[in-house]
Length: 359
Image (cartoon, rainbow, N blue to C red; front, side):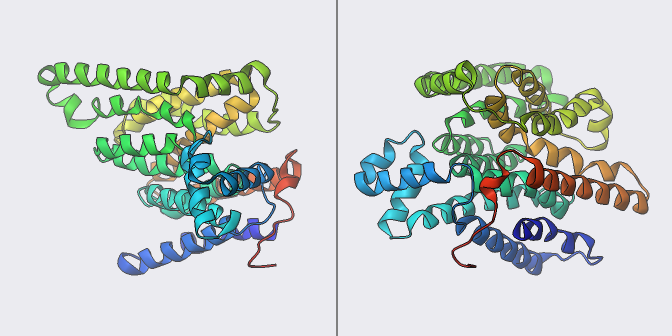
């Protein structure tokens, strides 16, 4: 467990440092932290619930080559396997590449939040330990979507779409993020200043976004039907901690929806967060039909937790209160890590932590 606690406590150092570093020094620190986490994620050995499945994928690509790689259910992940086979890096090469993508995406996302290191601490227990070390292919999709969401908030719509498409090659459920494009056309100046002049444009783009989403669903129809069959009809995998993880996202979503006007006045926000909040409530409903299906969808909604909680301390003008709430949020996620390590049914698949470079 020591390594996991080290991962969680690392952001506490810069978070508690009174001096705020900027410029190249700050970039260097983030780069060093990123490399540290990639090493822990990429060179892990027999850690994670899907370790054996990913070993099987690797050997399949090793035997069948590029053609076999592109025929995997996740061709993007198959390509990572093919690259690792080509350069003789083994499963660790795959994990390093996958780890690099989720870590870099998360760094970009966190550094665009008002308190980057608190954001990183919130993400560590679930995204960096459970997801990145347990669901490699989907973790890459999450990393790419995080990167894409920042592009979307900055109005770089084409880049966002490209990130979503790329993420879908790693986990096809990522196509569900395409409709977020529509939200961007209702944000900011386009909506508030010139609604009458732009309503035709907005309507056109909304229809195009809807058609693109339907086209993506049609294209991935067979794969999506398989996921529905596995996760909902059969529900052959049970996620015992799914309800806790889902409600950890649904509660911020519920609060955001309930106090949106107040929140938006204090933190002018994209309607993207409204849609993600609705998605968090929908995943809570889906929990009644498929624990694992809802759990896998909730992975994509996790950024809502980061977005919401890092801004809560900023609601207070008093510096002491801000620090108190920031420490309280950090402590809460520390308890979530402690609870998962000690009581989760499948935590034993992450324990003990082994690393080919450290052992």
